Every structure is written in C-alpha cells, then in structure tokens.
Length: 85
Image 1 (tube, one colour):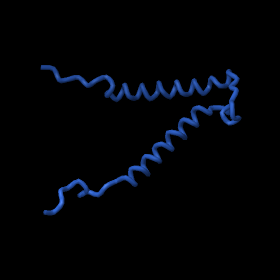
Image 2 (image 1 turned 30 degrees about the vertical axis):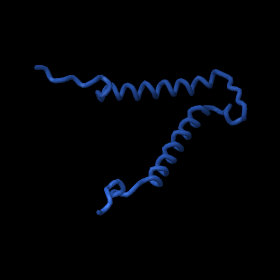
Image 3 (image 1 turned 90 degrees about the horizontal axis):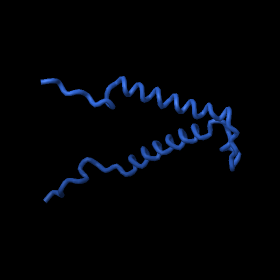
Image 4 (image 1 turned 90 degrees about the vertical axis):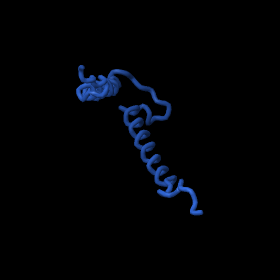
C-alpha cells in the first residue's frame, strides 16, 4: 500500500509559494498607485498606499481588541464544574 499523500495546501512548498504570491500581488497593487490618480473623499485616503496601511492597522486593531475581550471574558478552570453537594 502507498503512504497517504499530504494535501497540496499543507505542503511547505505550497505555503511558501502562496505567501510569496500574495506578497507580490499586494506590492503590485500598491505600486499601481504610482500610475493611477487616486481621488480621496477625506484627504488622508488619497495618500500613497492608504488601502494597505489602513487594512494592516484595522487588522492589528481587531487582533488587539479580540485579545482584550478574551482576557475580559475568560472564565476560571472550575467554572463549568457541578457544585459541591
């Protein structure tokens, strides 16, 4: 019998290629602003790479807020145990 093959999405080479491909697409998207005139509604959103840094900041804020919520909503180890009868 043959050994089971790893799924293509969990192979280290595939993961590395996906990271590189995503990074290249992001860099090309940001670089496209050099050739496209961006008109913003609020002034700051017309800045170079606004979508990239705003998306990163929003993601970092969500991670930070979720960490705080996890700490605040955390229950003790014995929270779900039945009372001592």
